[in-house]
Length: 216
Length: 225
Image 1 (cartoon, rainbow over the protein chains, first blue to last red):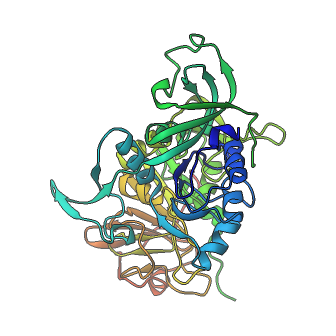
Image 2: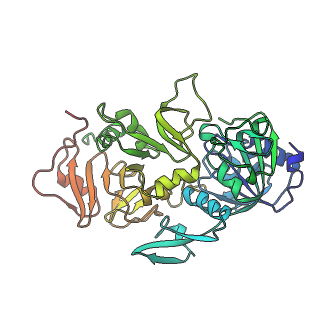
Image 3: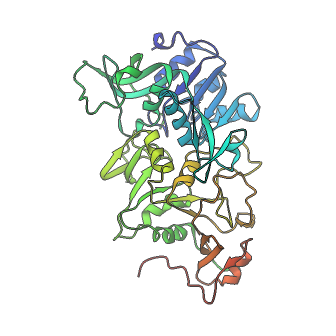
């Protein structure tokens, strides 16, 4: 576990999968907490629940900047640091957060979107009328590392997920230079049904076998 | 003694009558989250959750919770036959792409043009959170807002122009409150129904913009006859 995150430097940009307590790479997060990399820029739907999920990284003051859709009332350490002006937040509509990652992974540098037109989200963004409707320009969003959680990997890194624990994980896998996946089970290559593979191995760089930690 | 307005459950019950059979539906936080319990027996709808579920069933029974199967409020849920899992990107292809038939969200303010503010009270502590509300508001084929007609301090929530941070502009089709059902039209707000015991004038008094109505406004019906 600690080996998988041993090269993460201070100042790195890291994406974290997970939503609503499901699909968080909690063992990798704990590993990053032990590693102690600081000044991190993180991308995640939310900002932890108490000490759980990303909470431990805020508690340790390892994070400087966050891109998130819903930091969350349970994100105690983040909220304290946000109120104190110690951490920067870019708040992004959830569908745009993942679409910006999808664009990055797909080689699209930016795209026009109707979400947030006429709201605070549009501030500072180029607006354009296309076929009579207003749109704003959204930039692709990538990272140095993606920490994701899947249920099962084969030895090549093909991944399948479990239920709603899939959420952001397959998208983040495509949008980082190095994708590190935490799984409950590793199987021999060739034993996963190719029809069922959600994340093909091309997106996965490191696999860590670890019993999932849930923060219900 | 002021007259009794509808309860949150009754607002939810009335909103459930807006769901057509076979619809794909997303329900937001607050009152909308109560609606699933009131879907009429002869209507089948499929609930979408923006974390990647279509065909979400009721809350899981105690002892049967699976924390990999949760709704957008982190509550362990179940599936109905025909349900599917997908990623967050696909979940929002459905919201933003106009694939959901009806979305029902809570509201802090709705303007006479159908602008919605529902994610942040100015001056509130903390960072706030947008979640999926902006994507949902922009993409819904039909957007219903369920909320109390007035804020706790009595402020009117149906306003000429929203003063709170916006979720989306010109997105709301219908507002269902503890006082009324109001449709947003090109000609302004139309009072479709008033809560039992309330006159159109009383609903108007609690609404900042002019409500259009003519003659007798029907009483809000909470369940099918």
